[in-house]
Image 1 (cartoon, one colour):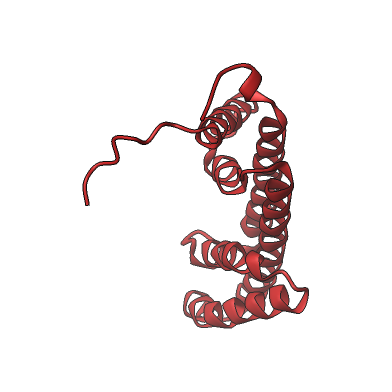
Image 2 (image 1 turned 90 degrees about the vertical axis):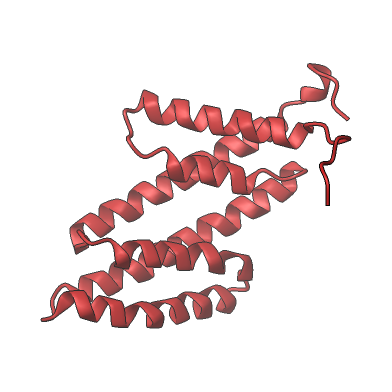
Length: 166
């Protein structure tokens, strides 16, 4: 397995890089410290066509919402119990199962992985509490929407007229 010397950067790669740059600039403009989620959303959502980008974006948004809701409710309940740190770890696998179930229930299987990631992040944060979880969920949903929107807008631009890509 050697180097692929024939490879050339394609249009999708350029669009992805542009979308990430725009997300980073938006985050800086709004003095938002965490550019990670918007940038990741734009990378994951950038597809060959605008229709595919929209479908991927919708799945990512739905997964983020379901994972955020499940994680928030679980954390809200766990915070009220003794041995909170241990209980939230024990509840984590149950939340994963719930996210998998809910995403499949609404026929959104591609939303499962991001929904599970959001639950894990919410319940595994050492400083997690219910109010910070709600803030976190709201920020992640907004970041995800920004990343999806930027990916959609960049994907609609006809770069072929600007530069010749293979």
